Length: 289
Image 1 (cartoon, one colour):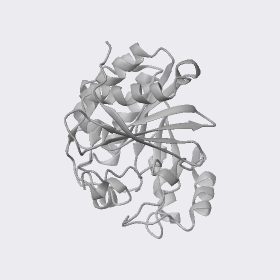
Image 2 (cartoon, rainbow, N blue to C red):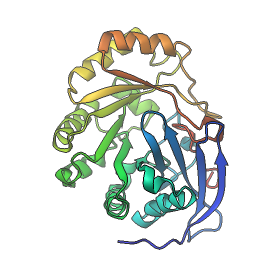
Image 3 (cartoon, helix red, strand yellow):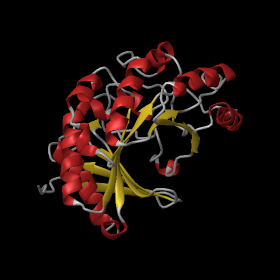
């Protein structure tokens, strides 16, 4: 299924590390824009990061999007067009191959029907698309997604990243969003799904200064990882976000080192494109604030 282009690229910012940040204008608006970016990571190659919503209903306190509001879900066509426009600007991706990551503005599983429709369109249209990655906090509505999607269809193609960030439900409800699945329920679903899709899913964790960067948190994380045999812990450095209610952990390196010793199966990650607001948590849609 081909998708016609009715969105326009209005701006491209280029980072010092060559990350490209895109701003697109949808056909139904003269003011609102949609954000995406193109990363070229040493370990993973080209990754197109797309948005699934204009704005976001969640109010994660470390994320730039918490200053905006949810305007609407994006259609599958609008998601696909983000990829098409990035590839039009970077035709080498057709030969080099690429992944698509649903980690831009919005919570993908709050718009899961359009997200999975777009994955189906993209993997048919682009044979060099290697993988689709979905990053999710596991909102309550994701339970509907987990039960309805034919996961076998995405075996060896879909990768899920669970945005945990706090090792207990109370703090997740306070600092992320109150309408999330409990950690134990989310892990139970992800364990089953990852078995079907043959995926080593990642549990994402950003340490914040004097909040979730303690030895107690590492012990709690270790217990969670003990219930997730198909998962790997990904500890990410918080990107600088103007006006954020939280700040990066000053003991990040020590925390990551201790987590590796205690838990073992740990990856440490630093975002690219932070100088053009293309890093994790930096997508800030000033057109809707």
